[in-house]
Image (tube, rainbow over all chains, first blue to last red; front, side, top):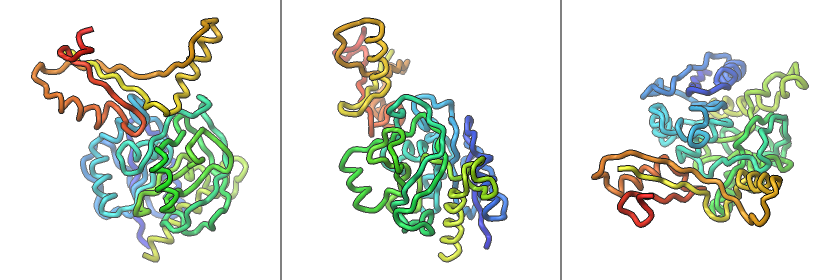
Amino acid sequence: MAFRAGVITFPGSNCDRDMAVALEAVSGQPALRIWHGDADLPAGLDLIALPGGFSYGDYLRSGAMAAMSPIMRAVVAAAERGVPVLGVCNGFQVLTEARLLPGALMRNAGQRFICRTVALTVENTNSLFTSGFTPGESLRIPVAHHDGNFFADNDTLDRLEGEGLIAFRYAEACNGSARDIAGVLSANGRVLGMMPHPERAIEPAAVSELGGADGRRLFENILAALASA
Amino acid sequence: MKVRVLVRLKPGVLDPQGRAVHHALDGLGFAGVSDVRVGRLIELEVADDTDPATLTEMCEKLLANTVIENFTIETPGSAEGGR
């Protein structure tokens, strides 16, 4: 199946290549690379990926400057048309700053940068990102962040829970996130933001060295969902 | 005119940086500090006739994240301004 994914690069992105490699490994097709200063997205994208990193040096707030960049106006418009958007780590921060996802990512409660593989619990299995998982399943995916402490007011958290929009939780407290939230979906389920890095867990042959292969399944879910849509 | 925007975490939002600074003050032997909150001061130089509503819009769109932060705007004419 034809699969046209675009990876945005902001100044300071550092997981953009990893994201493109992961998308190419799973789909067998080249991922388009898109610069933050572009005003328009390539036509016909099946997925837009916002990678991890430290866009604009985390100036003002993580993701705040990137959210105002020219390409993000196009990303917001595309998301409103239903184009799937995946934001990982800094990409998640950008999506909250752009108001495509609720809440905010604050400094980790323990103040420390956290870089290790964590266990996640799958909460939602209805979205195009998560439909191949089983409810309550445990995934092992690496995190690497300083600002991953998800915050939203209680009404918002209750709404996210009630509408099944929490995609993943940390199996154990990780960074102080409200209700251990590691990933959230937009109301239509087509925008996913998550702090853990699925693109760093795509190599089955090197499970211990390279973070495992559970992240690969997230990309496979996307392809399968788009193929059957 | 010079405009000062003070951005602060909302009351009730945990401030890990403030807590760390508080801990450091304790470590330096400063007694009697009961709480520390870390915020951000942004100074803008803008045209004298800038509409207050425009300043508010700047804060809401970029300078503060209203999910977690409050802001106050000090202009030379405002009660807190000019200092």
